[in-house]
Length: 476
RNA sequence: GCCCCCAUCGUCUAGCGGCCUAGGACACUGGCCUUUCAAGCCAGAGGCAGGGGUUCGAAUCCCCUUGGGGGCGCCA
Image (tube, rainbow, N blue to C red; front, side, top):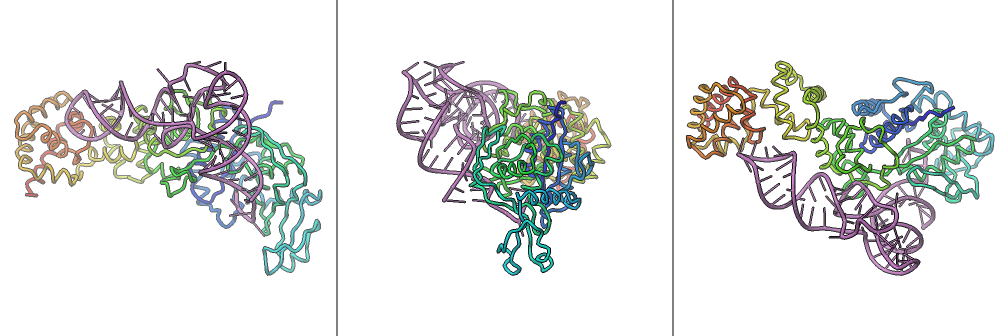
């Protein structure tokens, strides 16, 4: 019988999904999809103080957005339900195995002092009923066997070796009855038939403890692979001090899921020269865990933006429209969605010329908004440097006259119109061009002027020139 | 303190004993294009942490040092 690959991503719902977590999830997902296995989502919510349902929802939503979908999980269930450790605790799953360990004398109850709750009174293999009644804290501690060498093969780090002398006895069941991480993770990974564990390198030193439990319970451990952590530019773990760290933040900043995923994969993944831009879905077959870097990596915001820009420009324009709409939806910009839906052909042309200038959806939103909103605002610099100058009114008057006469609104026709206007030498070519640019879009940085005018069309262009002329007259 | 992981341009990496005068990508600098800003194209600057070995030969293998990171929680 062939063993089916089963992996899991097991976040604790104590906050948003961190890009480091997303990368871990990505490698699990990539490996699983390539091996045609099952990817499981498990909520490690044994920290009752910090775990929240909101966080759980946030994490699942972020994973869905990234497209890293799971085959079994707390929301959809599966053959090893439930998938929340808190629920598994209620079902008595961890207690059962803790008791087995105690019966085998591989774990003991520890009774603590009533006043000094950190102070251990004694250890016992029999459940200390009377002390519990009297209100003493009781935990279950795993007894680390002496003189053992724990060996395992890490798929990335190679052969690992730890001595049991270096490991102290550790608690597996807290006084509130909840299992600790090292215990719950073993029980669940075994019960859920996990075959491969890909997780952050910060778990490497905990692995021998878990292996000890596997052995004590007579279970076969899974394969392990500890992947390097993501750092900030100062070589400390990536945190909010360095900038954004949550997947959610990158989403609201206008990054594409495909771009973020591409960058995360690039971060510590050997990639063939000239092939760094890709959709991870197209790399499933070539994905090889051997290509994952063995070194902690620094998160580079600039490269992420570059990758995202590449995606934005390489995408089919129809998809850009869909992504943009989804983005506005995410930001709850209903009015703008309505404007865009009104004339889909126009909107597509606008987004198509605008995306050439930007790297993110947020930037795309900024640069394209004046095309959709007739009551666009004027940049301060435009008003000061162009609109308030003496040449503004004569050029605008002439422009309106010429625009009305111009019948050719192709890009070439618009170019001729603007060049003819500049040829009147009311002001320099640059000043003329910039004055018109700002007049119709309010900004000094826009897509190409000719193509912008052509996309706007005659009606909008003339109306906007007139609107600007009126403003020019009122501000003097 | 003990245990563990890691070490090539600023960053991500190629390299797995001679193809290395160390290659690519982002960022940076200059140029081209140009009505703006980008994009695009071309060019440039920039690195094997240090010290010992092994070898005819070392970025590549070994040891030490240094540096960075992680773990040693009733956090996960």
